Length: 110
Length: 235
Picture 1: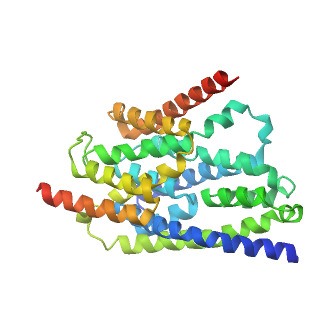
Picture 2 (picture 1 turned 180 degrees about the horizontal axis):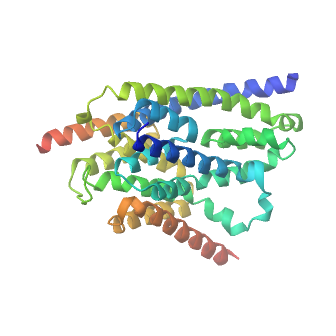
Picture 3 (picture 1 turned 120 degrees about the vertical axis):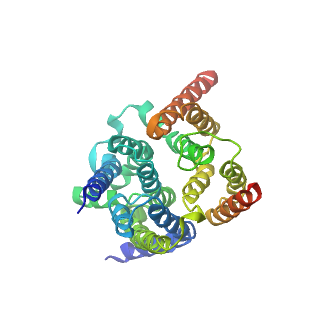
C-alpha cells in the first residue's frame, strides 16, 4: 500500500469511530438525564445549521479554487435547485433540475 | 422469534420500504461523488462500511478533494455527526432494558431513518409493541443497511466511468440542499440555518473549509439564545 492509501484508511477508520461513538453515546452509554438540559436543547439546532453551512461553499467558490464568485453557474443553478428542493422535497427532482441548469448556464455563458 | 417479535419485525420492513425512494438516489450520489472526488471505488465502499452515514461520507470526500488535513476532516465529521448524539439520547430510554452488547449493535444502525421511524412507532405503540420495539428497529435497520451499501457501491462503480467534465461533484452540494427543508422545523431552526449560511460566507477565507465548523457553532448559538429569549418573554 502507498502512503496516501494508508493515510486514507487510518482517516476512514477514525471517522467511523467518531460517528459510532456518537451513535452509542446514550444508547449504549450514559444516562441522558445526567447531561445538562441546555446541551440537548442546543443539539436540536445542529441539523439546520450544519446543512446550510455545507451548501454555501459549493455554490459560491469557483471549482478547484479558493476565490468567491457569486456570478458563476453553480450559484444560479444552486439557487434554482434550492427552490425545487423546498417545494418538492425530492432528491431526484432537485438533482435533475440542478445538474441540467448547471450545464445549460455553463453552455449559455460560454 | 415470538409472534409479537415477528409482527414488529415485519412492521419495520414494511415501513422502511418507502424510505428507499430517498435512500437509493442518495446512496448512488454518495458513491458517484466519492469517486468524483478522487477515491477508488474500493475506498468509497470501505468508507461507507466504516462510517455508514451519507452526510458524513460526503463531507469527508469533499474535504479530501481540497487536501484538508486529517484533524480538520475529523473535526468536520464530528460537527456533522452531532445530531446522532441527539438521536441516541432521545431513543435510549426505549432500549434501556436490553443487554449492553445488544445496544452496541443497535447503535451501529442508528441512522436518520431509524431514529425517525422508531420514535414515531414508539409514540403510538401498545405496551406489548413497545416491549418488542427492537424487533421493529431491526426490521427497518437490516434492509436499510443492505440498500445503503449496495447503492453506494453501485454509484462508485458506475461513477468511476463518468468523465470529470460532467461536474458530478456538484451533486454533493445538491444533496445537501435537499436536506435543508426537513431540518428546518421551527423559527429557531430557520434562524440557525440563515446565520450559519451568512457566517460561512464571511469566514470562507479560513483554510480547509473551517468556515463550516465556525458557522455551525454560530448558528446553533444564535438559535439557542433566540429560543431562550422567546421562552423568557412567554413566562
